[in-house]
Length: 199
Image 1 (tube, helix red, strand yellow):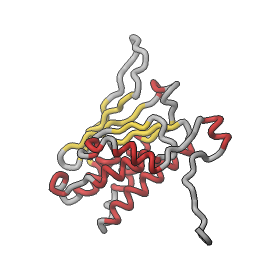
Image 2: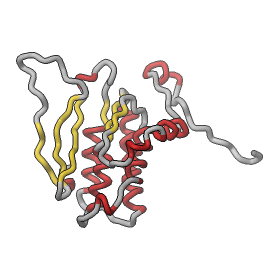
Image 3: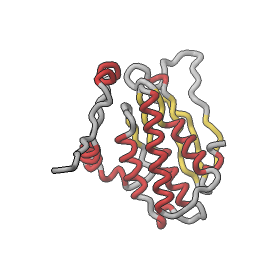
Image 4: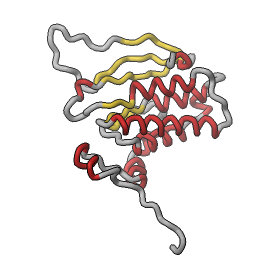
């Protein structure tokens, strides 16, 4: 193409990162082709997904977008703030791990941008607690960790939607640590309205 520069999607950020972290990015075409193989996984917005090597979020963002596309007022409506709660349900059922702080920060930013874009697309201003809820869910479920060598150190929060736009929250270990006399499973957290998650 004369006068046009084609920008290829990047597979790596640097050779050093490939060497140190084994980091190679899956491209959007491959991400979408793989997700196309499991169409039934996107019929329920609460279906849980775990990405154990999340990178900067290519799979996470694509999964979130497909879940948001499945939001339906007939299924998920019925209250004033139903759409915000449905968006948060989509987000709260996605889990991601990466060994790089930088990647996790970028993945959280990208997912937050998808949430904002979905809300803006509908022309709905965010309520006071929405942004805080997004940040709280991303902080608990998109985390820095080593899923190969430190899975027993990774703890998420499982958010289960309840009537009245509440979430039941249970801390969940990726891998149960070795049991001994002093082991205590993670305690359940109080049920909470989504608008209070960021408090």
